[in-house]
Length: 340
Image 1 (cartoon, rainbow, N blue to C red):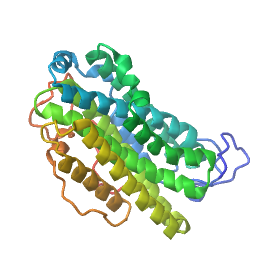
Image 2 (spheres, rainbow, N blue to C red; image 1 turned 90 degrees about the horizontal axis):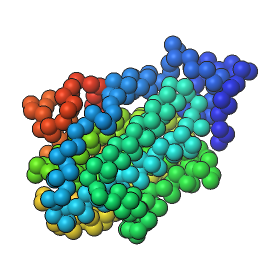
Image 3 (cartoon, rainbow, N blue to C red; image 1 turned 90 degrees about the vertical axis):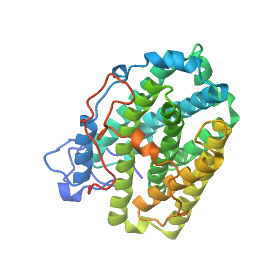
Image 4 (cartoon, rainbow, N blue to C red; image 1 turned 120 degrees about the vertical axis):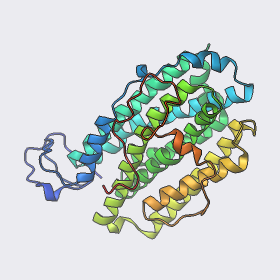
């Protein structure tokens, strides 16, 4: 694969000739003519979702954190350290590793917007850490000091590094699936630990911040699911038996890694999150993501903690449970059932 030209006046490509990768764009964002309407629709949703960390009141979390049990503090700190790594990785990965090969301007738009949002999430975590921690460096250094976390991070990054070192069409498609797994399994699992604390009335500001972040991550997940499904239509030749086998293994590995990680950070000490529930929830997430990209489910299990879905919602809230300063829940929203 070749990186796209950022200025290409010799191009004669018209809108119908656009490709996700391998096209010949002029470099001009002519957005009056759109080939991938789902991308432009998603762009507008992302704009409507604009928010900033300073909107969230973290005042109560200071005292709440001091009163957490040691297992609760451990789970909170380690979940936060994991989220910090993933958003840091994605900010660079999208701009430096994925977008350079994308030759559709409307998809370039949403990848740039996603990278901005990942950077915003990094700022959000900084606010959370600085608010609750007497030594923020400890949380930021966990990715170096906790070998379970480091091994998991190494595995997550490996597919992206494969694309960086060997930018083939096959590796690009694999990276799309890796993004789907990151956005739809690893992030969702990480958010659950903080929602669990909030469910018992603790760390409500942190949970509100995570709700904003997760609303962004939903659009990121839909972005890559649409990329995969569009590529399947346009480049069916890339969806080989080899790719399918590799993708299935990626999902199995993600479930294994995240289940082990979840059990490790909760140690059976977080109310409502037994080892069995942690593993089943992650298997459920994997099945949902596989179905969204036309793959068969692997585990066929029910969601054991359906209440998590309600915690993540902005619309249809009867009360402002999280006591946050932001009460406008009518900002942009997205639904997995929407026809993009």
